[in-house]
Image 1 (cartoon, rainbow, N blue to C red):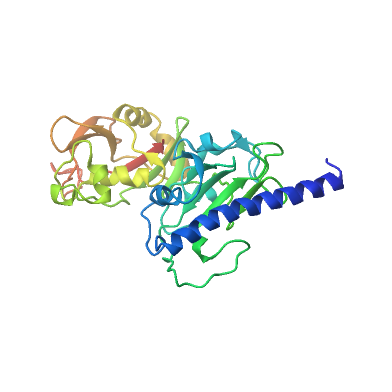
Image 2: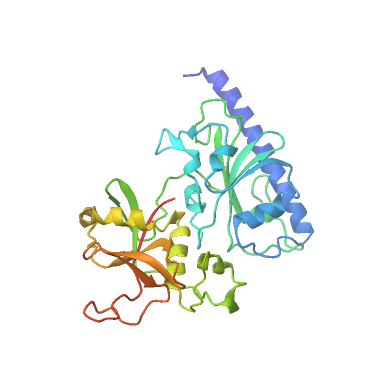
Length: 322
């Protein structure tokens, strides 16, 4: 344990560096406010950061899946995990932000070497140039739509998340493993899955909807269906930072379907895979009733009665980690 004098000196240094980082980000966002760039909502953290970095000197940007490349250490110590993997951060939930809709986190290395992991609230109130300043330390109301964690000493120890340590949070942000699963999470044969069942929405994959942000889930081979269940299943998984399993992974999961019973889930219907069929508008799935693999229309059918020839209706969803 460090002597009290050294501890107090470190704390003062940490506080000064924290305020310096907050001040730089705040100044950049005040510039955006003055230009009317905060009078709108950005669709994602990525979109927001694209604009922010025009006003904030940044040497490196790291997006989902590579957040750890913008952090000086592979792990940090949190209250819940002494070896929290920074690269596991994907969405706002992994920074303890409970927004109405999860948005991706983005890592930034500022030009002075400071490291932050930031998330933007897509549902925040737009800020007008005439809006009065709200007191929040060195921040203004310009910054109410963001939260971030920061390393205030460039990777030197103790690499611990705490109000008096070197990993600090702005607006209550802190690293959190959390579960991004909005359904039921359990393991099947050592693979963590999220069971959504039929609790997902369809996507319009007709060419008339090609300008919609959700149309990307229709690709690489859009079905042309206005109710595309397969695309909706893909989006449901990716919204949680997960993905639909490939046909081979899904078939392997079937071997462990009884593992789901520990979570009170019985798997006996068919599930989508991410693997498309060369036939236009179809994708592979696996029937967990008997383990057989089939191709299914992405647009689904109307009947889910197993005894009917139109049984293969809407498809259920198991998501796996990305």
